[in-house]
Length: 155
Image 1: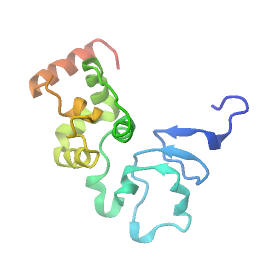
Image 2: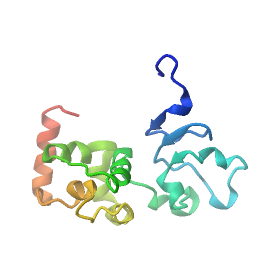
Image 3: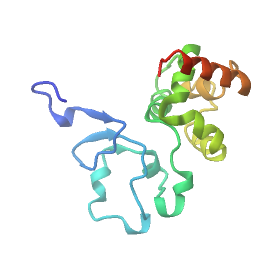
Image 4: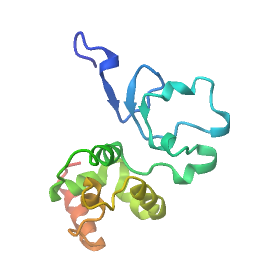
């Protein structure tokens, strides 16, 4: 919902891939079936920050390598290279829960590591480093922390 007198062109819509070239958006879903057969109006995604489009991934040839994280991780990866973002330890579990990220880490580790590498998460200054390469959690302590997080009903 837009505020009164707010124009669509002045907004950025998050966590949605908007197929209108005059709308700015950031999404992360697989939106192209075959990169060799793009629709004539594919330019409608020109103002959409979209990781699968950036890496030229389509469903036909790269579905198993599609972006496995959440929009927030993409945002942190982009903005974190320009501005220092502090991620508190208490934010790690919610950020791992977002969009089923924690499940994808264990079900598709190769793909997740590829994307974390693409987003420069191993850089110590990246906020993604704090989330994914932190010293706070071993695998077992992460499971316990996630279990505690779920029990609190904070999801």
